[in-house]
Amino acid sequence: MFFPPALAAVLLAQSALALTPVGHTASGRPMYVAPNGSRGVQVGNDLQLFAPNGTLLHTFADVVSGTSKRSSSTLARRGDVNFIEASTLLTRTDTLRAFNTSFVVPPLPATFDSQLLYLNAALLVSGGDSDVPFAEVRAVLQYGANALQGGSYWSIGTQLELIPDGGIVAIAPSRDFDPLVEPGTEIITSSTYHDVGDRFFRYLTQFPFIPGSPVLDFSFISPALGAVIGLETVGVLRDSDYPAGDVSFRQTNLTLESGAPEMRWNVSGAGTPSSGGPYLRVDVDGSTNAEFTVHF
Ligand SMILES: *[C@@H]1O[C@H](CO)[C@@H](O)[C@H](O)[C@H]1NC(C)=O
Ligand SMILES: *[C@@H]1O[C@H](CO)[C@@H](O)[C@H](O)[C@H]1NC(C)=O
Ligand SMILES: *[C@@H]1O[C@H](CO)[C@@H](O)[C@H](O)[C@H]1NC(C)=O
Ligand SMILES: *[C@@H]1O[C@H](CO)[C@@H](O)[C@H](O)[C@H]1NC(C)=O
Ligand SMILES: *[C@@H]1O[C@H](CO)[C@@H](O)[C@H](O)[C@H]1NC(C)=O
Image (cartoon, rainbow, N blue to C red):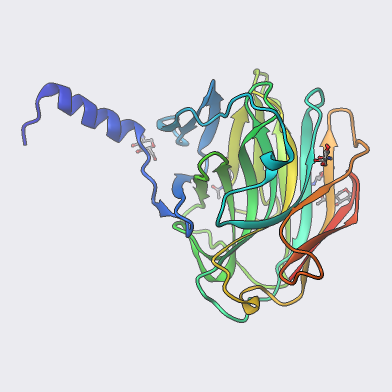
C-alpha cells in the first residue's frame, strides 16, 4: 500500500513510540504493560518508559501534576475505586532509602463476582518541589483479573499508577514466571532507593524473595513523598467477595537517609468497625516494625 511520505512518517513514529493500553481496568482506567527489565524516567512533566534494550516504549506526556497545595484529599482517590489505607508523608529534605513489609496471603474469597482486590505497599511520588503526588509505585497482591493477569486466585505484580487519570503501567513477568500465590504464603515487598550517581531518585519495587518476579524500576526527580499500605477494591458486590478474616502487614520498615525517624501513620478511606465492610487499624505505629491489619 502506498502512503504519502508525511503520513508514513506519522505511522512510523506511532509504532516506535506508542505503547497502546492492553485493556482497561474494571473502572475504565487504561492499563499498559511493559516487559520486566523496563525502566521509567521522569523528564520534566513527562514519564518516559524504556524497554530493556533501551528503546523508548512510551511517553506519558504531562502526567506530573502541578503546584496546588497539599491537602488531605491528595491522598484520596477516584470515584468508583474504594480504598482504605495507612499513609505517611515524608519531609523532602530526607531521602527515603527503603520501605518494606511482610504479610501472609489470605484465604480465597468465598465468591467471585469479577471483583478486583489489591493489597498493596506503595511509595507516593511527586514532581519537583510539589507536595501533590502524581504517581504511586507499588507491589500488589491481586485477587481477580486485570488486563495483564489474574482470575479467581491471588497473584503478585508490580505497578505504577498515574494518580491524575488512574492509568496503570504493569510490569509483565518473564514468560516462565507464574504469578499465582497460594493462601498462607508469606510475602515480603520492598521499595529501595538506588544511588546510580545521577541526579535522579531511582526506586526498585519488588518481591525480593520471589525469584523471577517482576521488578518495577522508575527514576524520579524528587525522593519519595510518602508511603502507603492498604486495600483497593473495584466491583465488590457482597461481603463474601472479600476473604474471610484479616490480613496483617508486619515488620514494616521505613528507612530514611537520617535513619528511622519518629513517625505516625494516618488512616484514610472508607470503613469503620461499626459501619461494616473492611477497615484498617494501625496496630503498632512508627518507622520500625510497624503493623497494620485490614479487617474484612
Ligand atoms: C527493543 O525492544 C522492543 C520492545 O521489546 C522491541 O520492539 C524492539 O524490536 C527491540 N529493538 C531491538 C533493536 O532489539
Ligand atoms: C496526617 O494527617 C494530618 C491531617 O491531614 C496531617 O497534618 C499530618 O501531616 C498527617 N501525618 C502524616 C504522618 O502523614
Ligand atoms: C524490619 O526491620 C526489622 C528490625 O530491623 C527486621 O527484623 C525485619 O525483618 C524488617 N522487615 C522486613 C520486611 O525486612
Ligand atoms: C526482572 O528485571 C530485573 C531488572 O529490572 C532483573 O534484575 C531481574 O532479574 C528480572 N527478572 C527476571 C526473571 O528476568
Ligand atoms: C527492609 O528494610 C530494612 C531497613 O532498611 C533493611 O535492613 C532490610 O534489609 C530490608 N529488607 C528487605 C527484605 O528489603
